[in-house]
Image 1 (cartoon, rainbow, N blue to C red):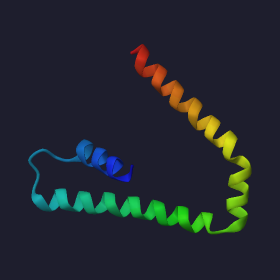
Image 2 (cartoon, one colour):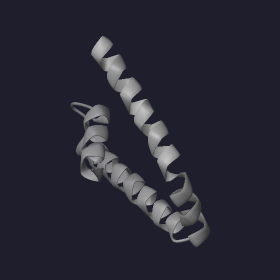
Image 3 (spheres, rainbow, N blue to C red):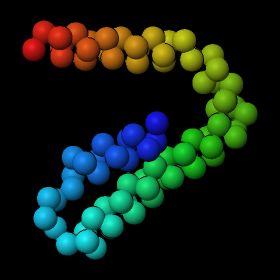
Length: 79
C-alpha cells in the first residue's frame, strides 16, 4: 500500500525531463514522508489511552471513511 502511494505521488509530481537529482530527491522526500507517517502511528498506538479511544471509536471512524469513499466513487461514476 505504501509502495502504491509513493509511486502515485512520484508519477504525479515527477517533472518529465528534469535532472536526476530532482527525481532522486523527490523519491527520498516521499519515502521520508511515508516513514514519518508510520512512526507517528506507532508512537500514537503505543500509548494505551490512545489505543483504547481508537478501539471505541473504530466503527464510527470506519463508517465515515467508508461513506466518504462511496461518495467519491459515486462522483467518479456520475462524471
